[in-house]
Image (cartoon, rainbow, N blue to C red; front, side, top):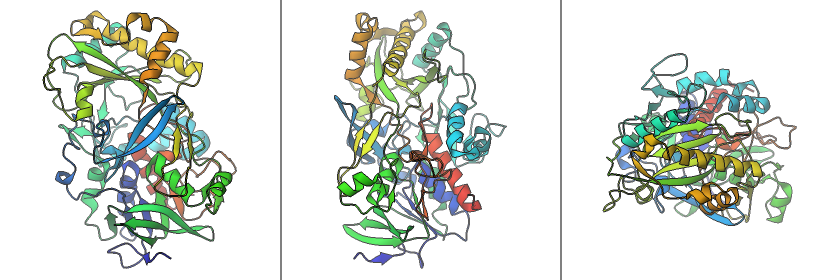
Length: 527
């Protein structure tokens, strides 16, 4: 029998235990603790620096992407299969700020079409009109200030990438020559086209949600943030969540709380549900886990965005980027016409060899190839998560099911070909000697191009949908509109797990939005 605690430094059990201090958890905990009458305990598995200078070296340099660096201390790796024949390693942030500490600083809002889809199952709370005040409240937009679409008082500072680097100038000219419209504000719901990337990196510094939301709130007497505290499962008694089992320094204890909110991310939150007996009955029973709630939708499906990297060779040495690794981004629509702007071509101003090694440039290689990250962002649920063991240390099996349909493969071919066409324009040709691959013979043959893509396939790390929201009588739903787990009182999920499908843009901004929306519902007692 594990000992029982209230959280170190708290005289009584906290009103809310937040599991995870990442994109959603940091926002939710900070907003809940604005109410001085509510005590909040945050349990984070990774380290919790108390000052920006205490983060791992290079973690906040916006010219680098820690998530691209194998073995970075702020990462937790997962072995997955992108296709049945394509094993891969994906990563998630580990520590204060979660994946907002290790991602690319891309902070683009979901599209109105996404909110329409989510509202169809999650209710009016997820309509664009209802979430817009939260989107404004969470940001300080340094380009637009306060207006009908943007905010100037929120914890997340947003600035769009400058398009002054020669490679960004060339990409913009190429997009214009190919007939794509300008989209100067990717957060304004304008028709998709070419534009700068809204980013939570300012003056070369990545400002993660731990810094933006929590560091300034740590002196609140009603807020306690504990690092190196791994939650192993939720403790449920008579249909109600009453606490969590936590491991610290090799010792385990039950920490009691009034309400439990899982903000551990789209892999860990559903895994914690399953470890707690909330999941598909047959799978839980096969592993000897007592069933608390038969919830067949936990981990049954998930969505993400397949990605390939296309590299091009500069004709002459180019300057290092000054503020961000990001250049411009082009959004265009695949030929099936179902989801406008579902293809993304994202420009890197740092060589891939530099991103993976934690360097802005590659020593001894002044003409190192630069890259485009090319992805299909159609909101599909092709993945499957399956538990392998009742041991909390054993990660689940994750099969992404990428490019399993002819439509998926066609969309990726289209994105690759537009990228090649952009690099082949006269505007870009003044700067580039062309793509390193694929060669023209491969580009012009569907079968050869499919083979080339499958051999180099990666992912955008945008996982969503492992514990989706929806009505209580829908077997495809796990939580309600505000993250409350159906059939288990006192337990919520508040991260990208709850999205019914991934958005048409990277979900970092949406993860923060989820924290804001759920915190507001809890503070106001919304049902």
